[in-house]
Amino acid sequence: MKPTLFLLAAGMGSRYGGLKQLDGLGPNGETIMDYSIYDAIQAGFGKIVWVIRKDFEEQFRTQILSKYEGQVPCELCFQALDALPEGFSVPEGRVKPWGTNHAVLMGKDVIKEPFCVINCDDFYGRDAFMQIGKFLSNLPEGAQNRYAMVGFRVCNTLSENGSVARGVCTYNEKRHLTDVVERTEIMRIDGTICYKDEQGQWQPLEENVPVSMNMWGFTPDYFTHSEAYFHEFLSDPKNMENLKAEFFIPLMVNKVINDGTATCEVLDTTSVWFGVTYAADREATVERIKKLVDEGVYPNKLF
Image (cartoon, rainbow, N blue to C red; front, top):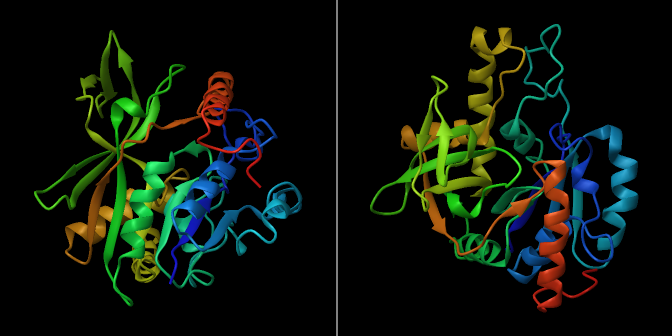
């Protein structure tokens, strides 16, 4: 069975100032996610699923889904603040979504095959999709608890216009992930890549340290594990009292690898990330896409 590409598109780009998932950056108005989908199809993916907010479904169907008709099977699912397990309700005053792994959970009824989760506003590159596509396609039928993440070299994932958030990873001799720590501020300072630690101090990072760009490969059992742990997450009073607490993918992955439920292989890639973390990134992203089109990596019109 061909793997599915699962795109997280429910978030509003607060730092960017708009729905960057729908921003046309290619020569014919292509979005970053169009290039991801094109690369995924080349890498052998057989279905595309998005998780979005219900309030921009009509715009999404008109602007995005219509272009894929006849190209690849597509489905939508929706992230909502009140999509909670029985017995739980949204705390008074909570407006922030529950995080990336809550968004992943929304796909449990439509995804029954190995799948790759990505952000919609990150340009991952052809090699990254080839690596994760090969991993998922080569899994034995019915495989469970065998996950993967594409580990980008941190030097290939920075913005020239401010700090970025990355999951900094460590792995063992089998290249199995042993830890992923979300660092919300990473940037170059006087030529050295640094992250801000819990005490607010800048600490150096080696150039090739693998980081997560939220490009994960899972088997469908991941949904079952996530449902159980989300229940545990919501049962913790501090997560209900903190109106900004989020159920992140790295939190879930750390849980299953640390308790021995699953393994997560760290896949290396030569791809160089780029994207539009900030509005000022847009011009450079348009130029980089144009260069790839001019070089023949992508056709002038994707779909």
